[in-house]
Length: 316
Image (cartoon, rainbow, N blue to C red; front, side, top):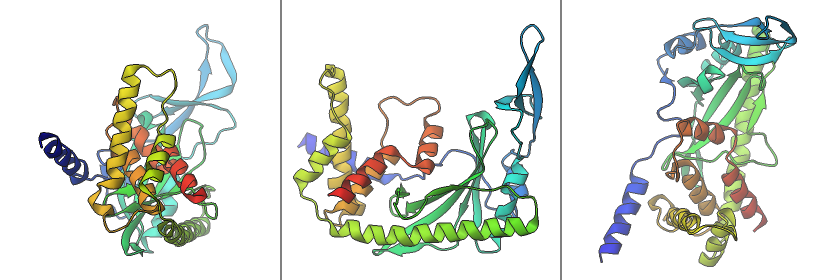
């Protein structure tokens, strides 16, 4: 009886508090009227300057420069001298055009000490897919460490449980690079393209959800899939075996006991949701100092565990 009570308490606490993957990161900027205000409110209105790099013996290192934050002299990255800086205000200026379309800013922040800066916006309308509310967000990234261009990523959230469902669809991209242009016409086109890409993704995501809901799963299939997703190596230590069993039990509960999946039925859509719930909300075995940042990055760029579960369900 005690075990049952403990189990019920675990289930209740597991599903009671729900937070978005970016909860606790960045600064709320929903009062901002434009991207410049959003960046200022979040303390991201600094600039990056490029400086030459010297060896310890004062010799110039040819072909490379350091990207340095002007406010505190923090080095954000070492880049080739062909690298062109795009300041945060320039990078996100085109998003102002989206505000006229009903998009609103929510949060802005930086990752890895300023190497990557991000701005999160909420798309103007929620989608009702298979009777469920799906709320689409756009995350815009600008990087100063030489790792890439300005990026936009669509991040749909299942409202009832705050699970991320940015599946790697074969038909549409979930993230794309932006071409930086300084002129107004270019910014308007970028904004239009961004909304178009996001809406196309959401439309196709809805069709994919319908397909997944039609794929029925037996309980045994689910248990087999969980073992594939969370494999146990042959030479595992007793502690590793114990840890893996704990993780598997956690994922099982998220499929079989989740209150928000009770009406969904036993199908591939429910399984992808359970894996997303596990990937987004499960407590890790070891919580590192930058755990929240890493989770946010994985969430936006595509979590490998959710991707694998989705591919398995497509093949089922």
